[in-house]
Image 1: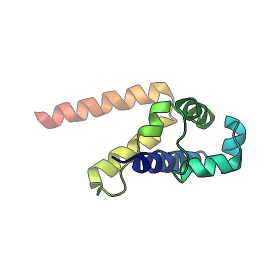
Image 2: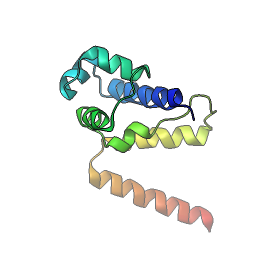
Image 3: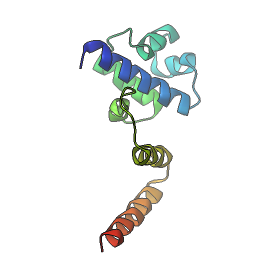
Length: 116
């Protein structure tokens, strides 16, 4: 993977998360202590953002820093199953922890019963 590719993928992921949170580039910048033009440059893959700044952006987005790297390569075709899994993860991301554990247990039982 080339340097530019990783910058573009992480930037695109930040943009998706920002939009999911209903934030403008300016609002995200204010929350993270950045100018909105910097956020735009990061989202477009124009800036080689440091780990410290990635941590600040993740905090401003109220996500774990690892979620900034949970991108999907746009060149790869996503299967219908992968799209559904991604949709479930997005729904659970902002759920109450008790709902997350309940969902895990339900999925575990479904998978167990389908193997029998």
